[in-house]
Length: 528
Image 1: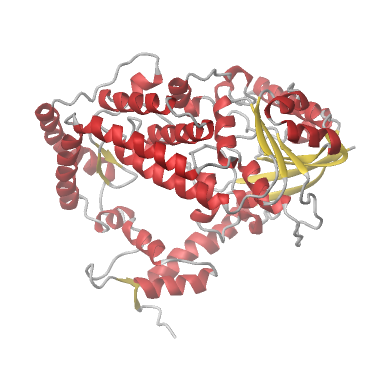
Image 2 (image 1 turned 180 degrees about the vertical axis):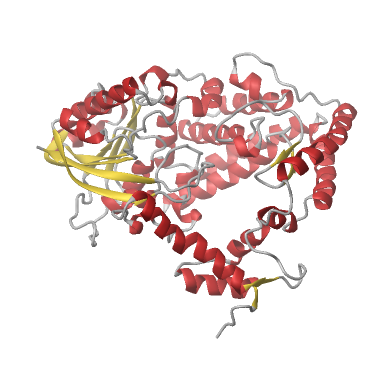
């Protein structure tokens, strides 16, 4: 039996935490807690130990008390089982689900819960079965499509954003992996040759060495973060002081290697948010992609490039989701607790994402079923689904004509939360895609006022009315929403539907800075 004040090795801690939480807690998970100052490290690198009491306190505060506190704030009808808290991040972002970042997507386990054929204390009946057709009129990054492909269910997606449609369709395509690898090899070779002719790589290597020395001295891991959490350091003052101190080293290297980190302040996204050398690298890779003959290969490598350049924008690590101002020099990074730098080459991220993408599409290839998935680009309020399917996927179009669509599973936009085109502005600029921001329902730029809410109600009800024409009579519709303004009863009424059930779930593992109590409702709608 363990004594409360006992010291544990990292392996012993992972074994204890696994038993305590009833889910897998790895050695890496425990190391993360130490690295980010959640738990104090005792001993040196060869014999690291942690206090069992600290471990108990951490999991009590993070898991047990969170559940109680969230229910107090969000209501006793909160269904904690639908939090899917037992899944690790690698499981909620499995295989092709993480081919490309996308703000506001739901986790695949939530889709699977309602689409598969299981029942439990909350889901008392089966809504969909194999070979059914399900519609997602707000396809986003294609989560419903991917899960449908796994579950032997045909999925039709619709999205107003041409880039979202590209992401969705790329996730469910079947590829010639050898061809993809060969084209990646060609592009990587060209990129490396181009970079070798510049001094950017040598500059960045020297800069990284200087940063490593500086950060090891003034921001030691994990002591610095632990002291921050204990309130022993004023982060704002100390970070600003060290940021200024290192800037002289950075500026000296900039002059020595003749680097041009400054950005053009034109209206073009690529001009504003990327350094001169990175812009040149992006253009080189893009031109190489244009030469690819295999259409599927060209699409998936385009997604790799898009994912790469998203990670290479000139911003702080804390502001990746919401850009503020271009960053052209080293800075104190609150996210990592040290001095960080902007990027000066895409090569590292390009190689990382090429490898990761190949792994993910190979993994999904072994899970896919022989069903149809297709995302159409269009306005769900007015799109002629059959007409578009006959152009894009005739076989699926014939199936819809024969059987009709069994229902909907979708997560509509929330009121005034995200500008869906703007979050991928870099891709629209690079690929020259047409933007249709004005057709988004509930975008951030329209706010959350009375007019925006009324527009949202009308937009959602128009979507349901249009889609209803293609559904069977006894359809099931599931809409995932954070309905804090109580708009969905009005939406259902205007669409000639009724809400027959609601499933309220806590939303965990959010990527936003605000990690407070947050819930969403899965509304179950049927015909009146």
